Image 1 (cartoon, helix red, strand yellow):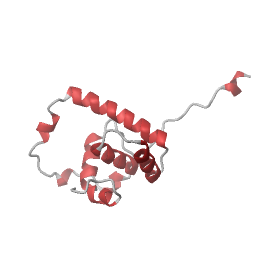
Image 2 (tube, one colour):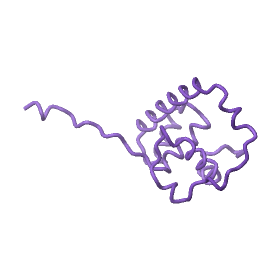
Image 3 (tube, rainbow, N blue to C red):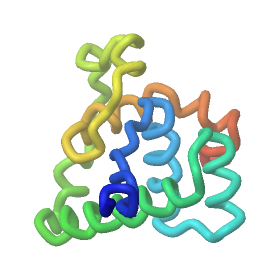
Length: 127
């Protein structure tokens, strides 16, 4: 009797590499999305607005934690050259990314595919 009253437990969504890439690129530019921007991004990625909203909430939490732990992380990267030899192959791009552990892979993909996302209107005009 009581089994029919319980709602089915939600499963955690698995985002594609393309979706995470676009979300990370957008997060790189702005930490908060207003309603219209969230709706536009969700539509362009085939996600719900709730998924985008929660992803941004979780990503901000991760960003704050990392900022608190590494106050000088930006100075460590200053002057670093391109590392083309360590860039992942294109088939790596199609594998699901874990936003909790694939930070370096996401950064490499952002750098490698910056032009493609600027064509979608997700990149900054200056580059």
